[in-house]
Image 1 (cartoon, rainbow, N blue to C red):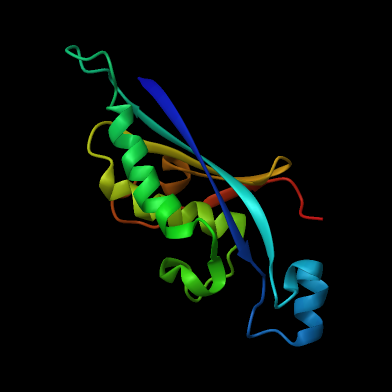
Image 2: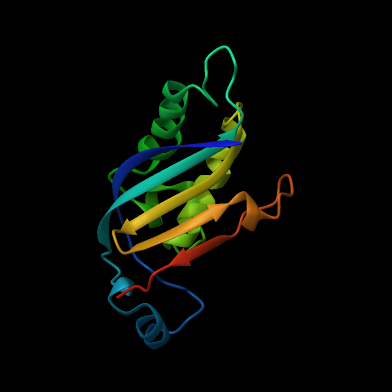
Length: 154
């Protein structure tokens, strides 16, 4: 099996807030990320597709098609947006790196028609990223993937 990864970048704002928590608890848990005015990040997203290369093209999938899917499903939807207010797929969720990776997985999975979606990695910063993978998803069709994160938010 071969894995092919393509990277896209977008800029967006967000803040962390749980309406079920008190103001003090939100501040204690989320710190400066709880600022209701939000703050921005330059996100990087790596999308990995796994499969066997087509003998006639030598490719797992057409990378031009993958770029078009990533531009449409990620960049057009999220670039220069406030994730809390302007991305319907994140409604009702705290837009953490983990939730963003799982949401992007759900957006892309039905669109990948050659090979299979293997990993979505979302970098919130060079030091913080979350992975959503088929392995963490349990390989169950239609099930929501789980996201594992690396790094600690400061």
